[in-house]
Amino acid sequence: MSAPHSSAPHGILLVDKAPDRTSHDVVARVRWLLHTKKVGHAGTLDPMATGLLILGIGQGTRLLTHLVGLDKTYEATIRLGRSTVTDDREGEAIGEHHEATGLTDAEIEAQLQQLRGDIQQVPSTVSAIKVDGQRAYARARAGEDVQLAARPVRISRFEITARRETEGHLDLDAVVTCSSGTYVRALARDLGAALDVGGHLLALRRTSVGPFSVDGALHVPARGEGDDVELPLQGLGETAGRVLPVLTVDEQAARDLADGKRIARDQDPSPASAPEGEPPGPRPARGADDLVAALGPSGALCAVLRPDGAHWRPVLVVPLDARC
Image 1 (cartoon, helix red, strand yellow):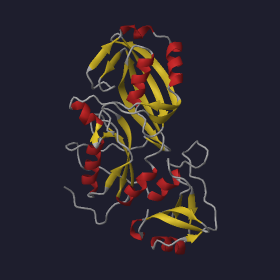
Image 2 (cartoon, rainbow, N blue to C red):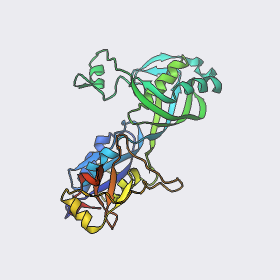
Image 3 (cartoon, rainbow, N blue to C red):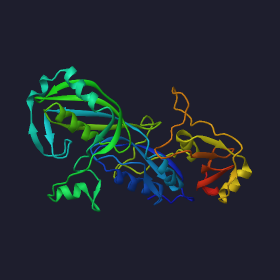
Image 4 (spheres, rainbow, N blue to C red):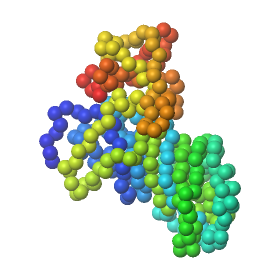
């Protein structure tokens, strides 16, 4: 094991999760590599899925609450003609319909239309939703008949990009952009059910979370794959400025915020910054309301603020020695 860091790290880490690893495996590995216990995530991925996993390190864990509710984009492969108990490839098959290969693009598009926009979605039975204090998947594996209530989700994009016949089934490659809390495998299930042929999720890759892309995200080696890896962290100021409007404050205000004091509301915040190629504009996480990120002269995050009459009141304060 390499020597521990002289000071605790703080920031945000964008990880490109490998298949067949749990999100908690990745969190545990990053804790070990960075020699810190304070690591959290802004939403997990199933073991079979790959793609963007956002981790908060140190004070970065406190910023995760403003990232969890961001919309997410996925690349998915849906197999029509087979249903499974888990709505994905890892579950036992419970129905086969080889006539799925005869479906036309127009027939598929007609049902996709019903799955776009604001819809009510019944989560997969093996989801992590709690039922009377116990995870739904645990109850299902114990043989219980788990019935989950539908919940509102928003599907802003559900587009088929390719189709092919495989082993008597019809495989569809799709791009899905959806609100937080959406189950893509439930979309696969519901599309198959609507077409009366059954369906399940064959592959899933998360390509973005709000303005954050998997492009440039890091591979975190599993135990035994090597420990000599750089894990450069994204600064809290840079991260907050991409999801919240920004208020730039001077050194005195930055120190006042460190003491939990309110500061005068004598200037308007700037819109959240945009990724390259996109117009600037606020990208608040769900529930962010009118929060703003206060950045010091160096661009470091000082606090997250809420308007309070003629003042800004801090709702999250970053200690002076952890600002980045």
